[in-house]
Image (cartoon, rainbow, N blue to C red; front, side, top):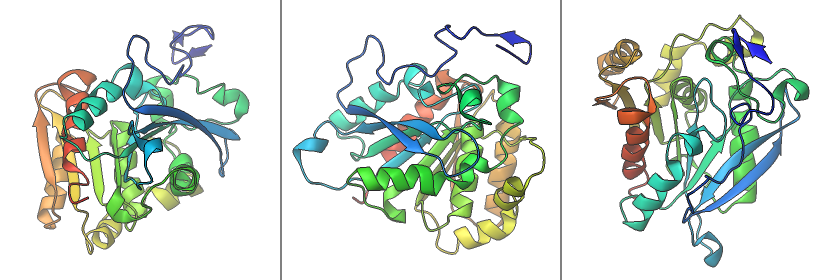
Length: 284
C-alpha cells in the first residue's frame, strides 16, 4: 500500500491500529473494545477503546465520560501506543488527583468503505488532513456518545462530558462542541490543527461553518472548562494563539496554556492530557 509516497505493508505493525492492551504494561483500569455500527457513509462498523475505573464492576455508580481523540496519522490506539494514556490515567486515579471517569478513544478518520477501512488502517498525514470533511464528526453524538451511553453507567448530560484531542483531533473537539453546545462542559484542544483542506461537501458545509454564530450560542451557557494548549515550539502555536485572542476579544472564558515542546508527544500532548484530566469533573 502506498500513500503520499510512503510505502506501508499490510502486515507491518504500524499499518493497523493493533491491540487495545499495551505490551509490557498491566494497566489498573479495565480496558474494553467496543464495535459499533456507523450511521454515515464509510465503513459499516468501527472500533473504540473504553477505559473503565478499576472498580467499575464492583459498584453501581454512574460515571462522567472523557472523550479523547487522536490526530493525523492516528487511530483509536494512538494514545495507547504513544500517549501513555493508561499509565497517566492509572496514576492520577490511584493518587486521587483526578475524578474517576470513563475514558473513550474512538477512531476519527474518514474511510470510504469497509475495504478502505481495512481494520482501522493507518493514514498518512496528508491523507488525513485532506479528508477532514465532517462526515465522522457529524455522527459523533449518535455513533460514539450514543453507544457509550447505552452500554455503560454514564451520566448522560453536559456537566458530565469532556472532549479533547490533539492536532486534528483538537480541531474536531472544538467543532463537535460547537455543533452540540448542550453536550460538553469541558473542551480541550491540544495544539489544534486548523488548516484542514478537504473539498467542499454537504457534510463539511453543515459541520464546519458558522464559527462566530456557534460560539455565541455555546457561550450563552458557557462550558465549565475550555482549555487551549500549545507548545512553545509548536507549528500550530500561532493559529492557537489567534483562536485564543478571538475568544478573549469576545470575553469567552477559557484558559490558554503553553508547554515547552513542539507539535509532538514529549513535553506536549502527554502532559496536556494529564493536566486536563486533573481539571475536569471536580464538582462530582
